[in-house]
Image 1: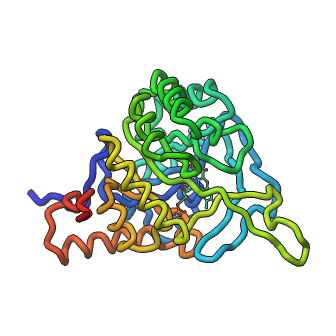
Image 2 (image 1 turned 45 degrees about the vertical axis):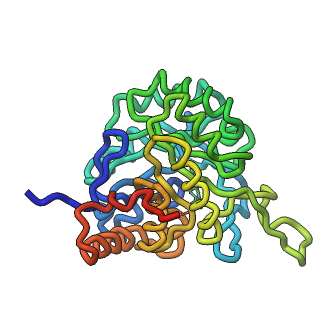
Image 3 (image 1 turned 135 degrees about the horizontal axis):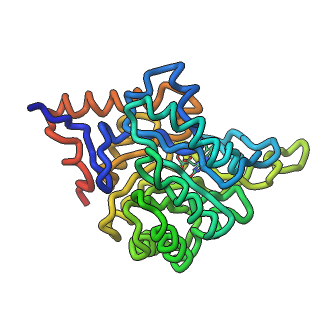
Length: 304
Ligand SMILES: Cc1cc2nc3c(=O)[nH]c(=O)nc-3n(C[C@H](O)[C@H](O)[C@H](O)COP(=O)(O)O)c2cc1C
């Protein structure tokens, strides 16, 4: 029997490879599937879902930055019902694991969304308590260790699916928040969400983004993301899904060496929509070249 060296199990969910499309950068997969076979990926984390449909923030809501992108899209999405009825059946035709990224304005919203997802084919719930672009939703729950623990424990009581808590980098100590998620009963941790930032238009003397601030993503944040993954890896026992500026297979390997069991690819999809498939191919080449039985052998094996 031949085993797949790229296979990875995260809180009991088997991914055929550790490359997952990051929430908000891959929509629900449909548009990308016209460009490449998305079955080459291990999974997809869908755009942040809320109770009701949302239009997101007014534009301009995307700005370029050196080595990255600033966005203040907010949580534009069709709402949980439309996702379950119209998007999920399409994703069920694919051989990729579906992660439902959820967000809300209150603890009750998050618990409601977890309940709604219980009897669906979704594999993992990703708790987005780290979106810097909406006033009430998300970020407010992800700031202090106390609030992280409280929301995690509340949603955990409702979720029959494994719960992955997505941490914000806009905090005092990421390791404290990771420990809080673990204490609250999280099954896995993903990090990082975007870093709160802004861009200025000198001619107009105005912020580029209508929302004034946005979230920075892309290669510019990779060194920060790596540092945070490493700190979290040393703080908790939970499996970690790392992200932040991954553009190629070598970047993904850096995250795995720092302790990530899998990675998510975000902004790279906006620059080259074929990126995530190419990263999965690159990891395959790497294990073949190095004659590895399992890519997991590298996890956390940074020599320090
Ligand atoms: C346009 C855009 C929309 C995003 N929307 C979401 C979202 O709905 N939920 C979420 O948890 N993260 C969202 N993110 C954050 C990404 O999933 C990811 O955490 C972040 O961009 C860092 O990874 P990257 O540098 O590879 O993009 C969004 C990012 C971008 C660029």
